[in-house]
Image 1 (tube, helix red, strand yellow):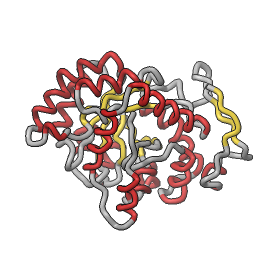
Image 2 (cartoon, one colour):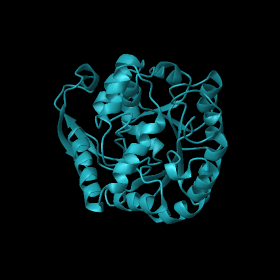
Image 3 (cartoon, helix red, strand yellow):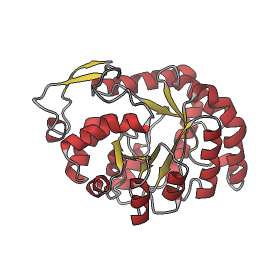
Length: 310
């Protein structure tokens, strides 16, 4: 849930500048300035765009408000569009708390979490240099879990740390990104029920190396794919695009990529009735103008969706 765009950052990255998390505050300012109706229209348009490309279930995250007032507003508006709303108040530390980061963590774990709780089903934290430390992230995840929320973590996007180990120990539903995983991270994930959600659009847009999904799957890790649609690091709404990258550059077969984009994502959301054709599951069906699912990767950049149910 956000307003504004950051195409200038993309242009700078394509010219050789490195990705940092600092641009998030630009989107925070634009989102805070948008009216409720403007945010509703932006969300409506993005979901419509996703649906035309075959997406039937959308998770919406907060994280561009970073104050009690604005995080609650984003959560409330997002809940009008999906039952899968994730609280990401721990995206970065807002400007007004720079130099007093622990006080912001206190706010996230206390007043802010209490205020958004009626509208959200999960909590997330961005655990990287320039965002939140492993210890701070552990506090935030524990606070969400105490309130009965599903837990997620952005980790190993920019480098290696103890974040993945901590996340697995706390049985988070998913670790998102996983671009830079150590051997011990891979071993820990393989022995856990935590889903590793790979985000090819982010690695494409930031020119990070693609994760070796072949190695991860062969190790026994449950892998999901998602767009990570956001204005800074992955402004795409196309799951087919992510599938194509996963097949071409990450070592996944078309069948594995399709599973990761459907059942894998459903598993990360804690929703076994999504993403599969079984008795009792939600009837969310996408008809493709293609003879088989391989064409999702075989014909990149082409919207093959004919009809969507669900």
